[in-house]
Length: 382
Image (cartoon, rainbow, N blue to C red; front, side, top):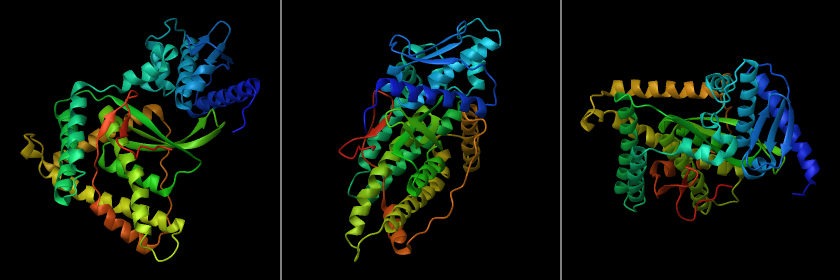
């Protein structure tokens, strides 16, 4: 992409910040005095608000080094200062400021002073797992390595055991009334639209991995345009597991398709590929549903005094708590169902058969950002 002069970049980025400022006010139904937004070269403080001059500053380095999601949260953090100031608060990050953050849907990790100094540290601290959560994912990792076995029964059993650990953890959290700490992660492919199979993966995650997913548009500062992103929200450990599952399926689909299209008598169309992808995900989802029903019938054998009916009730309450977290970020969130998709029956059916045979496998690891990535060569996220 053609490199722009710094003055032109400043103009475009400042224009986008003003647009975001206005959209936040409209979305959260607020009225605030409009500050002067200025870009600076400050690296000691990535964002600030001067109430005397009514000047909001954002560092160019913040835009250059971080995704726009982080830039947006810093902007909303500074807007919370404006709101708190209008409420008569003289405590920079005190109770009034925290209420302002709630009113503006500022992400939990972005409500402390450290975000203005070190956004990466603030984000990482919010996503860092407890020792118990790390132990859980390490145990899941070991089981998923067994799920890569060529022995079908052993592989299926290993995946089922991994899902049992995740369900048990979810139930124990509620039974023992442990505090749930929610976070989110963004999936971006730099695409203008969400393809049908990406929506199908998101739906699968929502139904089987204790997370919720929404799609939204997000500006990309380097490309100077907006793309669709998928946001996965849930508890820290569930988000990491769901992110792993997302990338596993995203990378598996083209591999399975490559094998499938070798047997086609004619050139494969994009419709055939889409039908096969959706078939794989439908078949895999069916497999997960059967496993889930079996697991819920075995809860009492784990030493938990939880019946299948109570298990369903607990998971429903967990979902409601998650919805409350999402509403704190997006109080006016609208859910829209996707329209029907044209399919080729033969490819869809073939995909279903492959999906029913599919097992989650390979390891997962926690990177420096707290994210989960696939091990091995299939780690592309473009």
